[in-house]
Image (cartoon, rainbow, N blue to C red; front, top):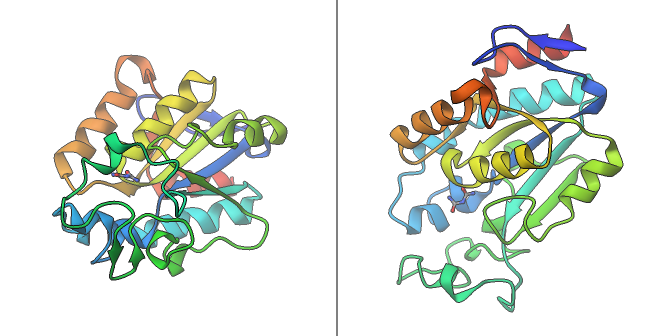
Amino acid sequence: MRQIAAARPFAFGFDPATTALIVIDMQRDFVEPGGFGASLGNDVTRLRAIIPAVAALIAGARAAGVPVIHTRECHRPDLSDLPPAKRDRGAPELRIGDAGPMGRILIAGEPGADIVPELYPVAGELVIDKPGKGAFYATGLSAHLVRMGTRSLILAGVTTEVCVQTTMREANDRGFDCLLAEDATDSYFPAFKTATLEMIRAQGAIVGWTATVAEIVEAFHA
Ligand code: C5J
């Protein structure tokens, strides 16, 4: 067992043998200019800035033998997994499926939907393509985690209050102990990130714990 004594709201215990790191949606469409996030009027600078921290967390997990799972929010080219309720709420001039500067927005196989080169999965790492905000909805993630014997999850990625928080809540309801890496996640809206971290760990870790990348990596090496 390892402990992150300084985790918030209290110490987080985990066994690296039954822990996985899930890196949510570090895709070009969210963190680079010209993608889906930018099409919604967002400044992507804050999201790009966490890439080194996410890279350090991934490197720490790989060194400790903790499996790294990557997710991508994306849809089939025929849009058969994209409900009109989701497509219609995008920016009218550049909606999911439309042609953008990095290919069709959030479509599997397009350059924009892929993971940024700095954080690219290595051979053998699981990549989950998900049509929803949560990584458990309409994917094989749950079955993979059960097969791997996973009990604890460390989460990172973007955006804190949308896909990361949704996934963390889905995982918490499925019985996983979840810890969010505070400086390896971000939002286009700083206040939303702050609120998400607070609501996750409120009421005795009602959704889970938070800790910094340095604290997590130190525990990996302990
Ligand atoms: C959003 C995500 N924000 N990955 N997706 O639409 O958080």
